[in-house]
Image 1 (cartoon, helix red, strand yellow):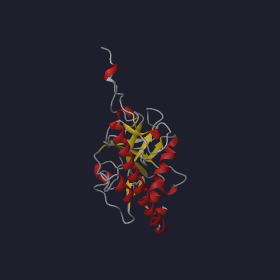
Image 2 (cartoon, one colour):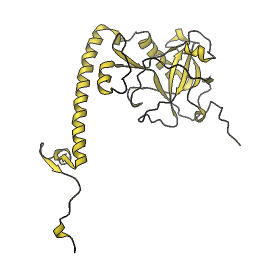
Image 3 (spheres, rainbow, N blue to C red):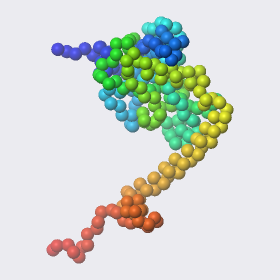
Amino acid sequence: MVKSTEDKRKLSNWKENDVFALKIESTEYPKYNRKYLILIHCIIEKEDWKLSRTTNTFRVKITKDKKIPQTKEEIDKLEYIKTSYNGFFKEKMLFPNDTIDLKPDEYLMIYKYVFEVKSLKYKTPKELIYIGNFEIDLPQNEFIPYSQHYGILFCLWKSKYSTIINDLLKHYEELNLKKSEIYDKEFQERYYEKQIKEGKFWLNDREETKKLIELAEKGFLPDYLYKGNKKGSITYVGREEKDPSKSKK
């Protein structure tokens, strides 16, 4: 029997750009009820992004009314939900390649739009409505870090999607509607100073780590790192050289 690859209830049949609708039913955010979250399945092509077979990455939009969009054009008009934020200066110092084309907003923030969902089963709940496969326009100025473990929103599919819906609506309220404290002047001043301090610390730590790696590659390491000896001495820990005079004839 040939298995159908069009059954979108199965995770194994999901493809990049598959688009799903999820009806909002929330007691925490009732004003959004009966609108829809539009989940856009995406694959992040970065070396350190490694997902399990039951974990998927999405971007998400929210509808303005209670209708499910049916075309690319209708979906493109909808607003993306920001799923997390980062201070621009720190990320620029630590990850210049990942931020090379990004520009901060007026609050000196950059935003992520992807999030992960893990399924405890290989089949998705019936409430997820498959719309179609569309190449939806990407969000502008999107920050995609080197790894999915770097501050990416993580959710689980649960009964009636209560957790994932509330998580996404919380971020929509805080970041899209700017209700979070990060937009307060006092917070921004403290956060800017924190970014600079953390950035300088990690840059310095990176240089020290680089020096240790170079020593290790040459066969030298500070012996206090592995023997507990007095700090400052250097010991050769490479391959032992044989004494030619002791070799068997």
